[in-house]
Image 1 (cartoon, rainbow, N blue to C red):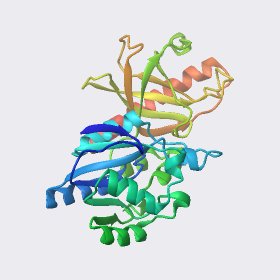
Image 2: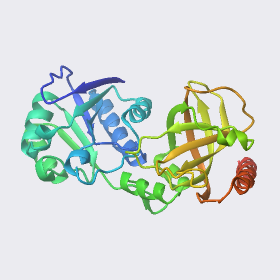
Image 3: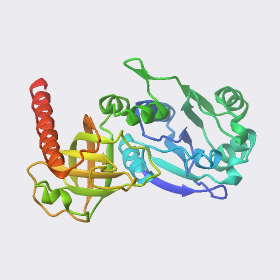
Length: 316
């Protein structure tokens, strides 16, 4: 997949494109249905499948007073999209000029003149153009008038739960990680660089890897989780427990952080990137008042996590 960063003044010299258009925050199973439809149509007509997405997310400008917290950052999103057999990914700069384009001008200037589209695929609830006046009904009409195909992918449910980015944000905020993983089609994860912490956990007998989190993104409910950890380009994974939250027992800081204890692991991984996959919610974060109670609770968290691992192994 070739990644193109482009804007309203770019020249796109690629012919016969079918575009899957959307923000694809989370790249969940609903998004994957849109992208797979794009790929199927491209194969059928011998066209080129591509994705058109926007940076920053349009909600960051249209809802400037109440910015939507996103699931994944751009680098994480690109890494996931690379696995989906798409030829090109166009990351289009979303700014005030683009935001104020009418839905007619967006189709005429961007989709037809710039991308010379042969086909478009979106979700059923796709809106675009100034004041979000463009929708699927409009695209059906204008595609026929301009000689390109248009397909809208219907709403997608798993176990009676709608698969959507907003639903996934809601599930994350409630700590419902198993359901989140079902809707994503993979474990929800956080990636980041291991930073130097206060080494308090080490004095309690538990080494931890600390990751600084960007506060502009949505994260799971503050609490303790069973996790799987993969270390910087390694195929080796380790189980562990992670605490995400503000660590009220030892800190008055309200900044959300991620702290991971990796089972049976004693290597130096400072400044290395790690991927933390969330498997199960163990308990909510709470103030345990003193360090002895915290030490006892950490031991219990580890024991509970290892019990789940054993149960999962037996079930499989």
